[in-house]
Amino acid sequence: MQERTSPIQPAELPKILKQIHTEAQALYGRGKVASYIPELAQVPAHQFGISVALIDGSTYSAGDAFTPFSTQSVTKLFTFVMALKLVGDDLWERVGRDPSGARYNSLVQLEPENGKPRNPFINSGALVIADILTSRYTSMPNALLSELRRLTDNPHLGWNSKVAKSEIDTGHRNIAMAFFMKSYGNFNNAPELVLENYCRQCAIEMTCTQLAQATMFLANDGQDITRHGHPGEEYLSPSAARRVNALMLTCGAYDAAGDFAYRIGLPVKTGVGGGIVAIVPHVGTVAVWSPELDSTGNSVLGSFALERLVQLTGLHHA
Ligand code: DON
Image 1 (cartoon, protein in one colour):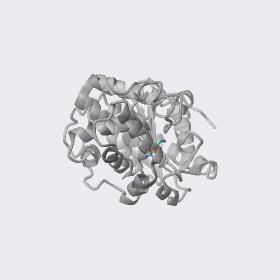
Image 2 (cartoon, rainbow, N blue to C red):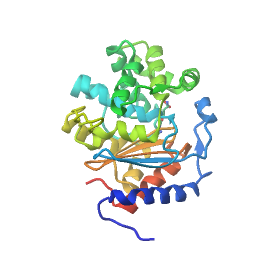
Image 3 (tube, helix red, strand yellow):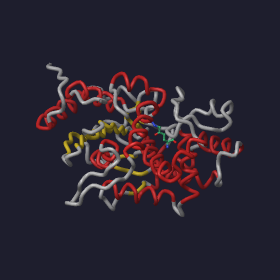
Image 4 (tube, rainbow, N blue to C red):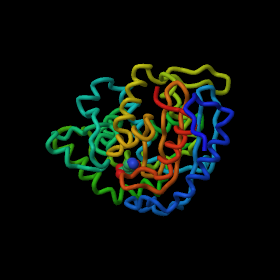
């Protein structure tokens, strides 16, 4: 097989995505569907979707790219952006911006580090972000939904109440984390309320095509792309978009961030629903989804697909 390193040729994408879909299916059975949120264990394992959205507005997809899935931690990207827009650099007083090198739901660093999470993408960091947004909005999950509906131009996005309830009932580690951070004064609202909001946030469902669309501003210097004939608008400043990408590159795949940077070399955000979104600055975005996870909680077929896409197209971080 010929491996290419030249810039992406859109005309070749349909063939390349079809090839990746075929290759990825050979990996079914290598991972496990998340089951610590009982409702997620019901998702049929053998599904795979991929969508590439380019900043010219074109989208290329293969497999189950139009099937909604539980976005889970991928939503931490959007809540982080909302909080950054809201409080700016003050955010860094309550959450760090370094990789943790630990599992996404680890508690160990919180005690020596006085209840300040390492970064906004691990669960403790995302809970602090959810606390910030809970203080600002009457309904934090609805505020997030309206951002996502705007970014995808789709008024029908919503969360799966069964998945949200399943996590509210069983998310004991997150409950522990929230109360622990409250004891350090790094939590302003009632932990129960923030946890409920956070579980609804994580239960938001999107398809690969919607996710690729929703993150386009990160590939486009913070600017939305043209849709329905309207010119794009600034969603985030260019410098903030660059910083979000930097954080995704260093922390977006948790303790596998180094491995992802080595194999894929793109800013990513992963979720235990099996979704991964990757940003190719000034080119476009890639969303992949397949429910079976590896031991770090990242999609097996998803990371494989991104690695192959980079190999076959030469898409990489500039
Ligand atoms: O808080 C949790 O554990 C889940 N709602 C989200 C975790 C997650 O998606 C981690 N990503 N790989």
